[in-house]
Each structure stands twice: as structure tokens, then as C-alpha cells.
Amino acid sequence: SHRHTQTSQSKSTPTHRRSFLTTATLFTLTAPYTSSAYEAATDDAKTVTKKLASPSALRSIKQCLKKLQRGSPLIETQDYEEIRQLLRISPLSDVRKNAGIVLGGLSEQEVVESGLKDLYGEFISGLEGLDGQAGLGQRGRKNVDVKSGYDKALSSLEKFVTVADALADVPVQYTKDSVEQQ
Picture 1 (cartoon, rainbow, N blue to C red):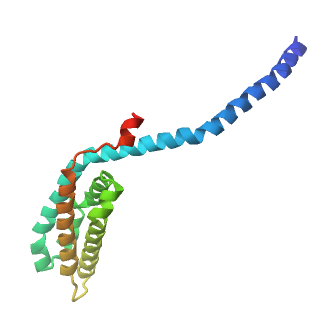
Picture 2: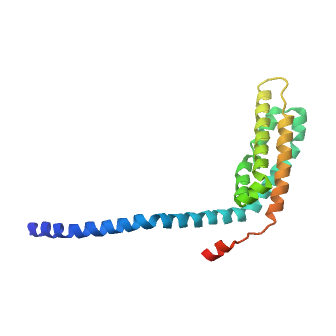
Picture 3: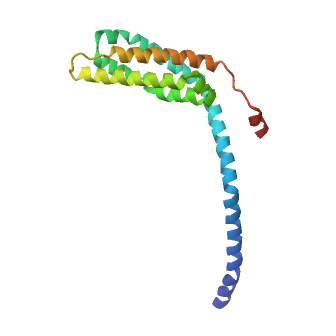
């Protein structure tokens, strides 16, 4: 009986191996097509999701702008500790995430043509400059310039909001290709 089991296993092994190799070959040949179609569908879904989340993210960015505008007295009085605190609480603490959602909800062409990415970069640069200078002032350095970073961050965020607002009014547009895929 033990011998019979060994024989039946050895007879089925080549067939099992052959079917495995056939399946593995088929999977290897079709996987690139399947995964690229899946990735394209996933990218489309992410874009649509970000497009739908954009109005909420843009509202949050507008709150950031108001909060930054209200921070003007802190800049004038050079209250370094309060300036740094302002940058670390919501909605300013979430501005990177929300800007990413707004930018992700637009096509690459819209982002490039509108200059939104550059405006966002200027804003972040101004914000980081403001934070760095306030940090130096907080540690006792004299002649610290927080105004230039503040002005740069404020003006670029104002422009970002204006441009993003104009683009947000454009509804989701389906291309001929995206309709045919459904």
C-alpha cells in the first residue's frame, strides 16, 4: 500500500508540473497587460476622488489664507513664539495635504498652464523662510526679517487661491477615451 501511494504520486507529478508551468507562463504573459490596465483605472479613480475632494481642500486653504492674514500683527510686533505657533496649528498645519489634493484633482496640463505648482512652491518657500527667521528670533538673534517670508507666503497663497478657485468651477470632464473604457 505504501508502494502504491509512491507510484501514484510520481505519475501525477509530471502532469502537475506541466499544468503549473502552463499557468505560470500564461500569468507571466498576461500580467503586464492586466496590471497596467489596473494601474490606469486606479490612477483615474484617484484623480476623480481628488477632484471630488478638491472643494473641501480649497475651503481649508482659504481658511489658511484668512489665518495668515490675521497673523499680520504678530509680524509687526515680531512675536516670534506666536508666529511659530500659528504655523503649527490647523488649518496651516494641513496646507501641504490640502494643496496636494487640489493639485491632484487637476490634469497635468491644467497644473502646468495655471502655474499653480509654482505658486504653491513659492508659498511653501515663504512659509519656511518665515518659520526659520522666527526660530532665529526666538533664540535671541537680532535683526531678524520675518516680514519678507510672511509677504512672500501671503501673496503667493492669495494667487494660489484665486487661480485654484477659477479652475474649481470647471466640472469633471470626460474624454472620449475615458468614456470608451467604461
